[in-house]
Length: 292
Image 1 (tube, rainbow, N blue to C red):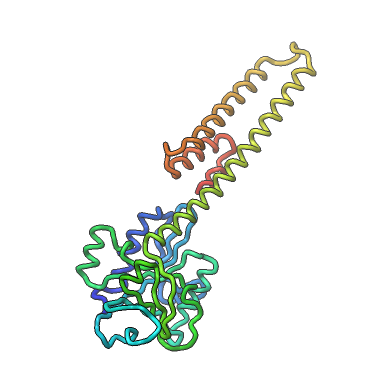
Image 2: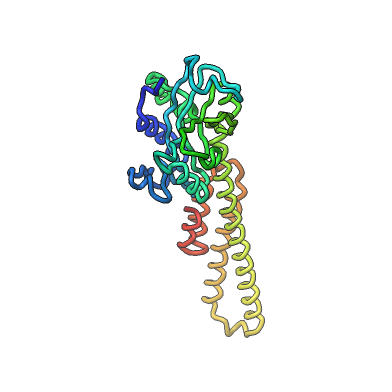
């Protein structure tokens, strides 16, 4: 049985949920058919998150297979039972979509086929109202399918038991492959975001360390200057300006240390924003580029 809703309806509902979860920095990109078939294409939607994560999705609709004469169920070499879902991997006879997605995944690793584990209008409406379209979808990396071996039609099939194990079968000859449910898919994205944030924090730590060294060096040189000239020759106004500037800088450094060590008091976005505001006063306006 074919899905009762269109691929566009499914894709819109899925992107709407993921856009909120990822905190996008730009409007989602939906390429034209011409753009989709070019190098760097193959996807139906591209989402860019604040952490620098780029997510490419190729939407597929799942057929619900319940009849005893369903093509795959009669084949040997799998453990599927009725009913099960299947979605098509576009044949090389029709387009180079799979090849394009493999090339795209090589440079933007968060590239997935996304397909619903439901097929009726009632189901998609229920999932839409409860923000559960993403949770009731499966995600398959193009590299999991690999290079298509021939010009024949190929399909990814899964039943409820396989889906719960993060498994599916790739046909025409059944081959077990990995799929992601939303929990696994979200975990991959979360780990990438954490890795990106860790890199930023390492850069901030390094910048602060270099600043502290420069400040200590400035104080050392000021002390040497004080020792080498007559106190009467020094202008009091110069000394006051230096002391005030160092005091302001010290207070900013203390505040940065507090923010970086604040534990669970701030979420990561709040922490980075506050650090950007304070760091700009220390290092210049270009500091904001570090946190984008």
